[in-house]
Structures are given as structure tokens and as C-alpha cells.
Image (cartoon, rainbow, N blue to C red; front, side, top):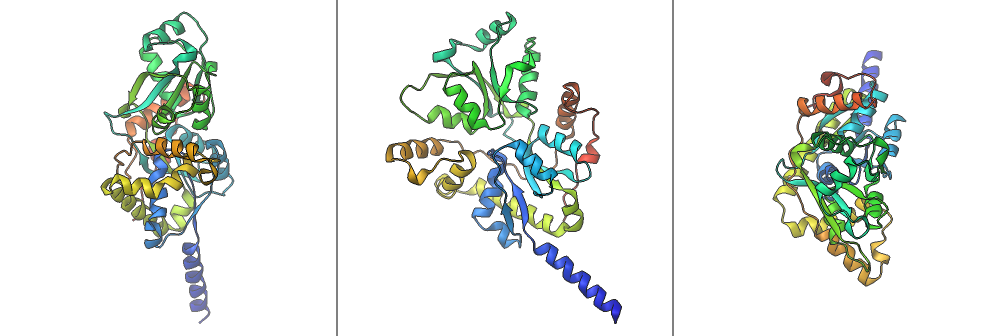
Length: 339
């Protein structure tokens, strides 16, 4: 009898743990969109998953919150995910790819405020860098954008001192620096490029895309999960992934007008925190809405495993930059999705 009571208590505890919310923190990036829309459309709720969104302003804040046990799931670029795994290897693991841009699609732009910089072409930029001119480049350090730009400059035979990379991990801040002419070059992914090119205001500088980088050159955004959650509550994680896959399928099948209408309030909060759309004057509101409406809606891949080749490339680069002391084997970082 006592054994049955103990078993009943254990079963009750397990059900209670499954009933708890999954704490999710998202970046203002395309990899967050399927999770956001899955929540907006009620798909996670239909799968029996309660999502608690943890809003945090920067990648560094999200990593610290994960380390402190305040976040169960987060979307991250691959570089930051590897650094997080290295810092808390017993808890952080890579679950699936959240978003990878289409291989042939232009996804990352190297922009210059030509009105201020007087840089006209990609060749002009390279020549100035080869001549030792110290041109500041806005991009976040210890990020996939830094990995890509290091690769691009290496292919061009140009050595760029790391201290020329001065950006923040808040890409909207970097975009503002470009618009204000505070940097010679800004490196921005979609949808930020569509937004700042479309958004108009008096005195806006001429923005020139010196070069576009296709999706095939970029590491994917990944979903980082707490290992203890996967081990203790595999059904919860499996249900979360079912809801995520349904969100991706609906996003890819939905009419653009439906997605824009449903996503607009969330997009403002996610990509442009602090912008009070309801309180903005009609002209400003119209400009913001027009710029967001101009953002391209990509094809979202179904969440799947991380490619080993790109994992190894980013890992080798991170070790070479001394961001990681030693390489971490793929199989010790990636956990198979439950269910």
C-alpha cells in the first residue's frame, strides 16, 4: 500500500512538472518568427504546451539568463550557442535548426552610408582597408556575422584588425549607427536591411549595398535547450517541436496579408522594442508600418538537424579566434529531438 502511495505521488509530481510553462527567450531575428507565430496562432496551446516568453534586450542577456536557470529554450546564432554550451556544458545543448536562409537568396548586406563615407563600391572598401585606412565596421563580436565577414575578407586577401568591429549585439543599434554615419560600414541580415532601406525620414543618407552575401554562406540560427528539460520532460519538448513544425508549415502556406496582419504587433515588439506604435503620430506610424510591410517573408525550413560541416567550420574559427579554448565534439553538443 505504501509503495502504491509513493508511486502515485511520483506520477502526480511528473504530471505537475509537465504542466509548467516552457520558458522561452527570443532574439529579434528570423529564427524567432515561427515560435512567435506558433504562440500567436495558438498552435503550442493545442499541443498542450504553455509558453512563457522571457523578453530580454540582447544576446548577452539571454545567455546570462540561460546560465542562471531562468530560460529553458532560446534561439541563437550558432557562434553564441557554442559559447553558451562551452560555459554550461551540462545544461546547454543544441536541439534543431531554427532558421537557415535559402542558399541562393541574398540574406546579409554590407551597407555603407555613402552620403557620409564616400565609399562607392566593394572594391573601393577593399582598397582602403588594404591601404591601412581604419574604417569602423558595425557588427556584433563573437557572432555568426563576425565569422562570415572574417571569411569574406580572408577570401579577398584582406587582413582586418578585430578592433575595427565595433558593433553591438542589438542589430537595431547597429542599423542606427549606419544611418547616422557613425560607422563606415554596417553588416546587417534580413529583415533589418529591408527595414532601414525602406524606412524614410528627412535627411536620410544614401544607403549603398556594397555586397550581398547569400544564405549558403551563413551558419543557421539554432534552438538551444536545457538538457535537464529534455531528460526530465521529453514529451513536453516533443510537443513543442510538433507545434513549431505546424507553425512553419502554416507560415509557408499562409497568404502574405494574413501573416503581416497577425505578425505586425509582435514584429514591432520583437524587432523594434520601445517603439510605441499606438502612440506614434500618424505620419510616423504610417512610415513604420510601411517599412515593416516591405520586409520580405522567407521560406522557413522545417526544424531539422544541424549540419556537421558548418558546425566544424564555425568551431574551428571560434577556437582560432580564441573565443573557445578547445574544440567541442558535435555529438556532445547536439541532442536528438525526442519523440
